Amino acid sequence: MSQKAAFQLEKYLFNKVIINLENKGNQEMVVDFNPSGVYIQEKSEYDLKFTFKAFFEEQGIENPYVLIECTGFFKFEDVQETDQIPSFFYRNAIAILFPYLRAFVSMVTLQANVAPVVLPTLNLSDLEQPLKDNTVTQ
Image 1 (tube, rainbow, N blue to C red):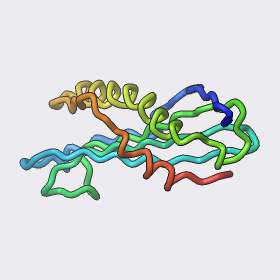
Image 2: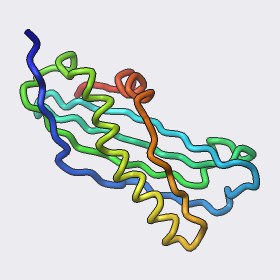
Image 3: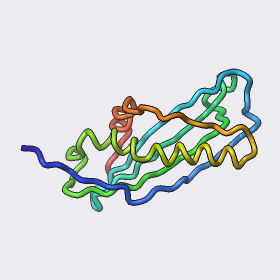
Image 4: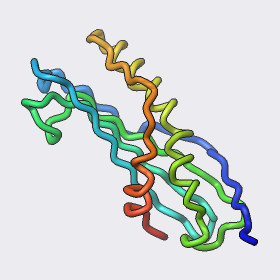
């Protein structure tokens, strides 16, 4: 019988916020999410870096209109090694952090006195594998 690992979000912060009005375009705006993580074995903690980019097709992803990095700090119970992290953690950690990122994107673009970038509720389960692949242990 497998042991269930409990985890919780301890805190989160927005460590990078860029709105570059020079990269505003006329074509369709595209959004991109890039998750990565660091499992800190000694403390049984996981730092999830969730990078959001909104860019216009003609400018390309390398010239984002909005770039926001959010880091969520998770704490595990009963996990001593990376391979003990249950697969549901990756999907759920993103789902837990996304509403904070979503609200912040809307607020910060509205406060910049430009048309706000409003993200719909999204199913980000496709990011589970990229997060697993982009996780390192410290």
